Picture 1 (cartoon, helix red, strand yellow):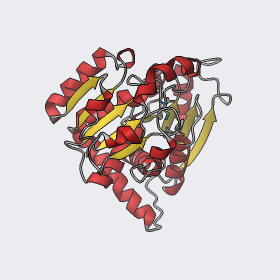
Picture 2: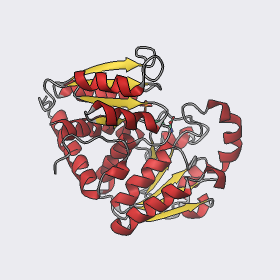
Picture 3: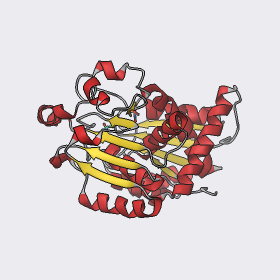
Picture 4: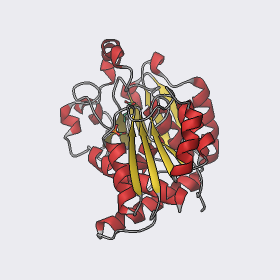
Length: 311
Ligand code: CP
Ligand code: NVA
């Protein structure tokens, strides 16, 4: 498998085999890290980390991923550079492309990360935009593989805001990997029809199933994974009141977890979580919760993405 020179803007551009390769590589790198072996797979590389929005996990995962393998990470916060304000994205991209070997971007518009990739000439990795969060999905899939041994056929139910970056990206990833994927959300928070159709096309090839429904109580029966995310993503804070009202019936609580009728169901969340909204403290702290495995796996999978696309 050769992913050298590739950008990761959305998982739409990655095949079943590409994703499998990245997960296998992440598993290897995780094993190596656990054994205390520090590598040089990114030796001499300089990596720009552009953040328009705040981050704990993504920032730290990229930073540690770089340092573990000998690269130099450079954090560029929203007030540090002129991106899109005093300098066009195209110009900043061309400058950074001359200086850095790879660029991570977290921010608002998907268009920005796409422009960075087009004009910088180096691999660009999407660390979250309003539309997608592909590196999170890799961490989530590695976590599922660790818990169940496989991805194909896993009954995965995403509950809550069904049209945010996580719902979109999980649906894309699941449709590539042959999973039985459902979104339970109120109708006006369903993903765009166009994206659902695109994912259904991927699903034809992988034998995945895609279901979008309002009926959360029925769809969770038999679920292996119940996943949720915040009800207001970064930049949508003013919608809080309206979302709480709309999404209250979609809270992941102990009663919903019991409706899976399985005692092996795991609870997942990309974090940060607003406990009391999308998930109760009880579920978050329960034995079913694997949220901190996911958080750790951000680092191993992001490291794998950098290693695969740079070396
Ligand atoms: N899950 C995630 O992306 O976390 P951060 O916002 O802390 O990076
Ligand atoms: N949907 C959330 C994900 C955070 C990792 C947001 O965009 O804020």
